[in-house]
Amino acid sequence: FTATFPYVVLTILFVRGITLEGALTGIMYYLTPQWDKILDAKVWGDAASQIFYSLGCAWGGLITMASYNKFHNNCYRDSIIISITNCATSVYAGFVIFSILGFMANHLGVDVSKVADHGPGLAFVAYPEALTLLPISPLWSILFFFMLILLGLGTQFCLLETLVTAIVDEVGNEWIIRRKTFVTLGVAVVGFLLGVPLTTQAGIYWLLLMDNYAASFSLVVISCIMCVAIMYIYGHRNYFKDIEMMLGFPPPLFFQICWRFISPAIIFFILVFTVIQYRPISYNDYIYPTWAISIGFLMALSSVICIPIYAIYKVCCSEGDTLLERLKNATKASKDWGPVLAEHRSGRYAPAFSPSTEPHLEVQPLQPEKGRSEAAAASP
Image 1 (cartoon, rainbow, N blue to C red):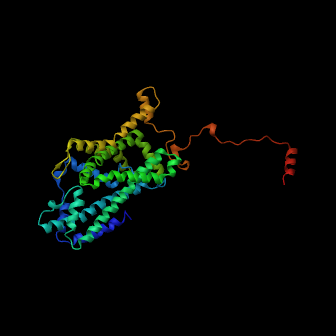
Image 2 (cartoon, rainbow, N blue to C red):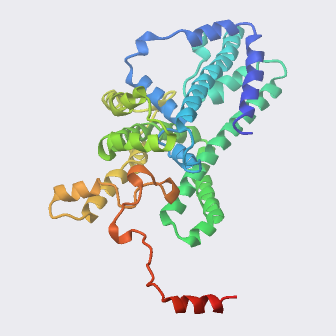
Image 3 (cartoon, helix red, strand yellow):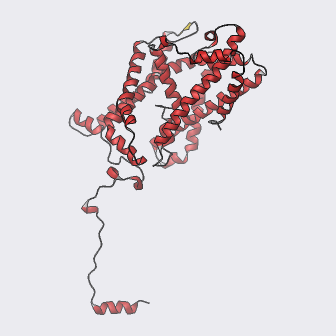
């Protein structure tokens, strides 16, 4: 319901929006590109954050949900469907938003750029204000905010399940598995308490701080590390063979090239440009103080610093006399790496054959004829 009903609300608002005077002006503003922004690093960073957030890349949610699929599930088909649906939904939502904003600009006699706010202000300030100008405005406002609540709940379901699954799988004992409900409750309560400051008068400032640091920079860094780790440490050949084992066919050449070269390069350049053209955030006329910027950097580093820390820990715990030997052993797959179920362990994951474990028949010595006759007579 949380995934499908928002489309119903979007369609209702779209039909209402395009019937308003000035809607075409807003849609044309939405479709007209601003080429002077093409070299702005912030635009590319925001675009990357939007893709990561809407698709769930580098959040862990996709990996968590995929772990509940069947082993031979066609993830190639699923990825194509999800990507196209996500892109189409974003474009469709843009028509819904800017048709109403075009009506608002026409009603106020100003340009659309004057009413089209950016960031959270678009959804929580500009668009609701435009809805108040419509007839029966409470109805449209209720539908809009009900849609936002459903979208938020759907996102929280995924994020909550990601945290809970990570905790339960990492601990892995029977005690915590049987008490997964209490773990879920504990994570939900902690998340609720951490979200309380966002409901205060300073909530919008904290929201922008987290959105600019915790939900953008760290995602780009994590995704770049994931591409490098999978393609060049685990090995692209191993990864492609794993996909072929699960799907029954190798990934297309286009995806292989993207995973190996294009995706890491694009993500890396976005990261570099974002750092080079970094500007302290602000909200309207408010300039964030130094202590707030420091908190933002700490939030961004908190989800990234664990990667090098665990890498150092893994190297220190690996066998080897030299650092190079430890590094090689740390980057090798463990002996039990592979599908969990024995029925899925095929190809290079098949159990190794050895004469010591070869099943054999136990040959009994031949009995004399008399003994066989006695045994036959003794049997019923």
